Structure formats: C-alpha cells, structure tokens
Amino acid sequence: MSLRAFLQFCDILEREGGLQPTRRATIEEQVAKTLYILAKNAKNRSIQFWFRRAIDGTHIRVKVSPLDAPKYRGRKEYPTQNVLAACTFDLKFTYVLTGWEGTASDSRIIKDALKREDKLIIPEGKFYLVDAGFMLKSGLITPYRGVRYHLKEYSNNPPQNAKELFNLRHAALRNAIERAFGVLKRRFEILRGGTESFYGVRTQNLIILACCIIHNFLMGVDPDEDLIAEVDMELRNQENSQQTRTSREEEEDASRGEMLRDVITADMWHNYKNC
Image: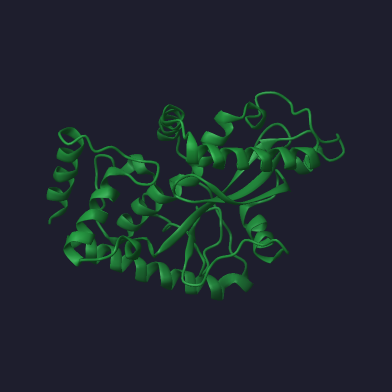
C-alpha cells in the first residue's frame, strides 16, 4: 500500500467508519498496527515489542526558604521541583521520582533514577521513549535531531523518509507522558501551580505520590474522557523543544542507542512501505 493510499484509508475510516484516536494510539497508528498484523500474521504483542513506556519530567510549584529558592527557580519564575515520571501508554504512572530542584536537568535526574536504591528498572530488550532533553542510550531512545518531530508538523505533510517516520511514531507514543501529566494536574488543582504552595518539599513529595496513585486508580475505573479530550486539545496547541548535552563518558552507550534506534527505524520504514 502506498503512503497516499494509506492516508486516504485512514481518512475514510475516521470520516465514515467513526474511528477515533484513543489514549494509547493515534488513528494512523491503529490502522498501521492492524494492517501489519493482517499482512504479516503477527501477534499484537510483537508490534509492541520495541517500546515499553514513556518518560519525562514536569515542574510542580513548591514552597522553600528564600535561601533555597535559587536552586528551585528553574524555567519558571517561581520555585518548583522537577518531577520525573514514567507511564504506560494508557496514561498510568509506573515510576515517580520527586524532590529534585527546579534547576536540575532531566538528564541529571534520569542518571539518579537509574542508580538509586529504588531505581527505575529498564527490562532487557525494552526501551523507554524520552524527548531530546534526555541523553540517548541503549535503554532510552530519543528522537532524531534536525528532523521534524511534533505531531502537528505531519498533519498535512506525511513522513518522507525513515527518520521522519520514526520521529512521527516516537512523538505519537511519547505523547502519553505529556497527556498523563496534563490529566494529573487537571484532576488535582494542588499540583497545577496557579498559586503559591502551602507545603514544603517533603510534604509535597507525599502529596504528588498520593495524587499519582489516585490518578492510576481513576484511569482504571473512571478515566473521564472529557478531561482527556481537554488535555489533548491543550497539547495540540503546544510545541516544546529541548536541548541536551552528552558527556564524554556517555558516548559509548549513546553510540549503542543510536545503532539500536537506526535498526528500529529501518524496520519501521520497511514495514511501512510494504503495508
């Protein structure tokens, strides 16, 4: 199936068949997965092999002393802590690391998450999707630099090569963590940062973890599709780009990650062209 035919097919399924994006996948991804299963006689599990979950950080307002304020005043004009979290593609949190100052970079926090006692575990053969603010390594897959990435950039101009296809699918899947954060903050006003926090870092850490636990429960029994739709609309109007730096000691692992990403990309493109 050609790219033009594929997109026309997706349009027909949406317009006449009522197919809608879900919490887990865009329309194009749903159709591509189905065609792959039908054409290759593959199990659904096999096409979810590449990526396990998505990881990102979010800033949550915190109350600190004037002495500590500079450490916590990062990208925001007020003190925040940078909370690292991983989530599944159905928007449930699987790992949450709180307490880092707002000035701490995502790369610095993920290094701590991978080494601490209650560390983030990356199962062998699985990979977490991360944005360009993280380092590329064998278990953390970033998008290609210098290649269009945001979903809206592909709305009227489909991918033209393997790297663009990879970035499109990376963005569609990694979008889960941004959606999870969006839903979490809309559910719990205490996390949104509209006003100064009443609580210090230790108490707020417990509040964040409690909110994530309640969020996971609600996503299983009462996900609130209207709330999710509001978050999706908000995210469609946003574009975020981040920069990252890789230290010398990380180059070897980054090289392995780059090779792994290239293999996945080539396989994706081959299947995409032959659907």
